[in-house]
Length: 219
Image (cartoon, rainbow, N blue to C red; front, side, top):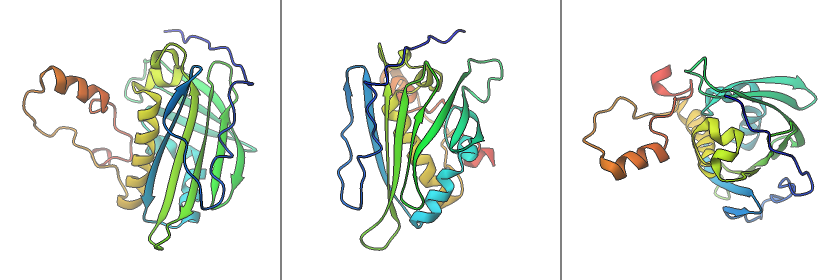
């Protein structure tokens, strides 16, 4: 199935790489404006900032903990090539694009932006030591163009999630991988009839989504 090409207007895609400076900052709220969705998630993770930075900087490991990421290949000079889709469906739809790291401060933050026409997405992840000395506060913020809703965004369409939920799940999986060494899953556990409301929630929460290779049942 062909992917709709979304015209890129760089002047409208304002950078989010400057929103997390130092140790005192307030993440942007979840919002949708002018066809762009900005979403954020925060987790306190039991590891030091440098360790978390190093893990996140290894982009080729992203398919291990991010849903619907088939592969990421490091191209050098901060550029990488992404293939997204359902890893369990080899004949399914694929979306490919390149991403460029635009800001890289070891142990503190990584900022990136897509550079392929048809995919407008940028983000920043920051690593700030918790004040109590227990772990690191990790903030992930992403902004992407979503004309006509989630189905109008190539990445969100193949991921079967809205942009806001993608950000939440990505950071949640990252925390689980770091702290537990795997992503816990309830797949296969018995439950009663869902009903209409339960079935909708099951879809919204991604209970039927393919599990990343780092999950417990994939190990």
